[in-house]
Image (cartoon, rainbow, N blue to C red; front, side, top):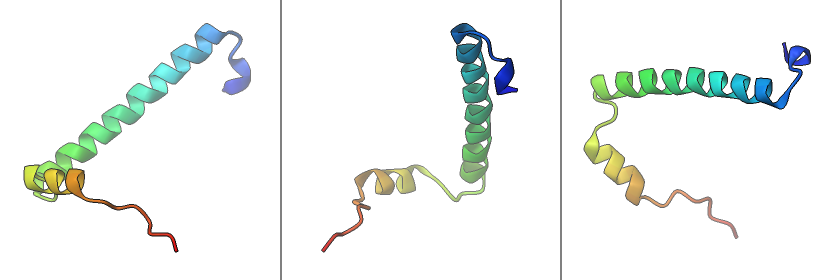
Length: 57
């Protein structure tokens, strides 16, 4: 597929299509997690306020 990309405009259009595709997948998975109660407002706040950096010695 990529050898058929002849211009920067075509590449940009393909990138947009791929971004839209993955955004829809993320939206569906997020909706599923919310519906099943795996993620809720409390858990999102907890994630936003947590420090998950890898400790280095």
